[in-house]
Length: 166
Image (cartoon, rainbow, N blue to C red; front, side, top):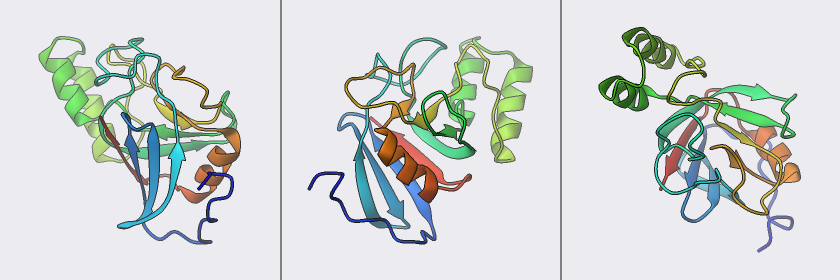
């Protein structure tokens, strides 16, 4: 079934969550445990592995949440993801990529479900956004076709859980 002819989403989604499967280039939208729709996506320009540092072109792995919905995005519409998360901060501190104060701020932001620091050596500004799916082209984000991004943007609230798998 093509995405354009796929079933429309329900008017209300009570427990939205997203799962991105990097190897399959898929984003799945769930309501609780019920799969509602699957979208084709593309990733960062270096899609294999977990994001490690700013500028590596990798899309991060792990559990995140949507911290913002941006209707003024350079890439049509976007959902901001809570990268770096606590696991990333622990790795960054252990590897001397971030300071103790940066670590503390990331952990505090995650505990409070707000935007973690976006300008650390670990990178930041990871979004699900529009812009097309011709090839892996982002700096670590997840990209969809614009019309499908509109549908996802309208369906997913801030705070929704997002898991990115290999």
